[in-house]
Length: 397
Image (cartoon, rainbow, N blue to C red; front, top):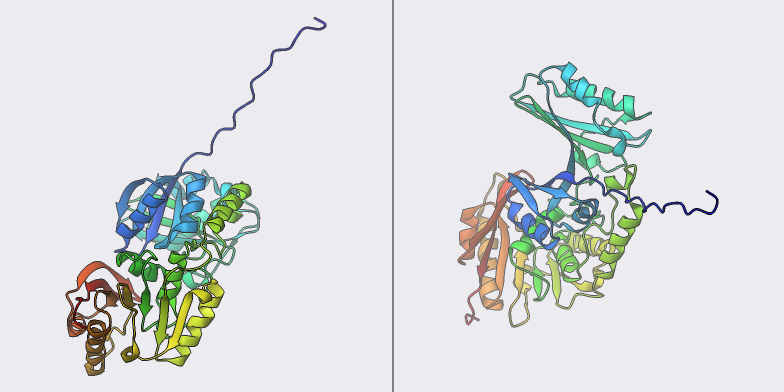
C-alpha cells in the first residue's frame, strides 16, 4: 500500500487533574468573613463547621486560596477517608493512600492525630502506622519531631488525621507555615496580634482602603500594616512559600502566572492616610521595622504620641484599636480611665468617624460610652474577645 495515507489520529487530550476535596481553616468565629473572601475568589463552599469551611477546589483554586485569603489559617486537602477499628485497618488503608503525590523522597513529615469516641485512642500509635505505610511508598522520609505550630513551615509536610467514631479522615496541609505568617513580622511589642485577626477587624469594620484609618495603640503595627496591604491590594501570601510548592507534579508555571497576576494588581501606594501611633517608643520602632519588611513603610504615618494627642482629619474614617484586655488580676482603674479617655477623645476629635475595637471586658467597653455593635467573636491568645464597632455621633465637637 505504497503511498496510502495513514489515518490522522486526533491529539490525545490531557485529562484535567481531579478536583480537590479541601477544608479551609480559620479561627472559630471568623467563618462568615472567610466565606466572603472565598466568594470574591469565586470559590464555592460545599459545607461549614466551626472554624472551617469545605470546598471542592481545582489546583488553581488551591493556589489562589493560599495566596489571597487574609482570614484563613491553612488549607488542607483530604487524601483518604476510611473506617478503622484496629491498627491492622490503619495499616491496610494506609498502604492505599497516594503519599507520593504530596511527599518527595527524603522529606521530613509530621502527623497531627486526634482520636475521639473511637476504639483506637492512641494518637501516637496511629501516626506510627501511617508513617510506616508512607515509608513503603516514598523512600527516605523522616518523621519530624516538632509538634508546635510555631516550628512549622521549615520544609516539612504536615498531615492532619482526625479519628472520630472509628472514621479516619487523613488530610495533607497545602499551606506550610500558618497563613497568618505573612513574612513581615519579626519585631514584636507585647502581646502581638495575629495578622489574620487584624485583617478580620478591618473587614468586620467595613474598611476597604477608601477612608483614613488611625490605630492609636499600634503595638508592633499589625493592624495598620494589614490596612496598607488591603489599601494597596497586596495579596497576603506574596512574600512567602507554601507546602504545595514541594509536591511532586507541582505546576510551577501556573503558580508563577498566579503570582504574576497578584503582583500586577498591587497599587503603587495607598490613597488614604493610615496612621500608626503609640506612646511607647519600642512599639513605634517595631512598627517601622515590620512595615519596612512588608514594603508599606511609605504608606504609613508612624508617630510616637499619647492617645490624648490624637488628631484625626475632618470628615469620616476609622479608629481601630486593640487595647489592653484587663484579664490579669489587678487594679482595673487605670484601664477604666484609658477606655473612658478613648471615648472622650473620639467624641471630641473624631465626630462622624467609626470606632472599632477588640474587647475582652464589657465593663471596660461601657467606659467608652458609645453604642457598640458586636461584629464577631473569637479568641486571641486563648482569651475570648469580641470585635465591636460604634459610630461616633457627628456634631459633638
